[in-house]
Image (cartoon, rainbow, N blue to C red; front, side):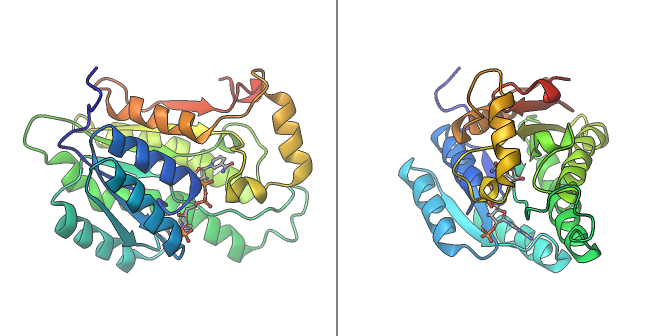
Length: 257
Ligand SMILES: NC(=O)c1ccc[n+]([C@@H]2O[C@H](COP(=O)([O-])OP(=O)(O)OC[C@H]3O[C@@H](n4cnc5c(N)ncnc54)[C@H](OP(=O)(O)O)[C@@H]3O)[C@@H](O)[C@H]2O)c1
């Protein structure tokens, strides 16, 4: 394979101001793609990500997006079109979580449920819908790609909260539904990380659960940001994989399905 298999391609990584999003955006740029990222409020993270993209000699741009808001999604499509001219790869990486132990049903109220569900499940759907025309319309007979970043919490119950687990289970099934709906023009796949150390999200996983996850990995280490980015690259350089979910978690038996 060429060392730059994505030359001439354009990618959008949502949540590119975050820990994993920065890793994905940087690897896609190193593989030759021009990369737009989105951020919601963390401008320093967005700037660092764009700088990393530019460091690989690729075009980078940061777009402000609140994916709970339909008008913000419309503005993102407009700006992506203006800045990049089209889209080959959408990585639905942005998400939100909060640590609420599963038994604490009282704390997980309707507002928190809605924020998690609208960010982690409805947002990726609305983005896929909004970018469908661009993803389907490259004129060189290439397929477009969507990669959704879910969680092993969407495969087996256990994560920062019930709402987060349920949203990621929904995102995994959305992956399969979109793979059917957008075929044959767009391949849709999913990466499901387990705990990823030293990330803002991992810090919101209750301590006891984080330790249990570490103890459960058969490889003795949880998945790393680089492993997740490498799996995204594998999906977007394939022409014959769609509707699949890959857990990147150090090998947790509960996620081996
Ligand atoms: N870290 C882990 O241990 C872990 C484990 C399993 C799965 N994952 C998944 O991996 C992905 C990346 O996680 P991460 O650890 O990199 O998280 P992170 O550092 O907290 O980044 C989250 C990103 O999502 C953005 N975001 C939050 N709410 C948003 C909204 N309403 N609209 C648009 N963007 C929004 C944030 O924007 P701003 O910061 O700019 O506000 C940030 O860019 C997520 O899908 C997460 O569920 C992570």
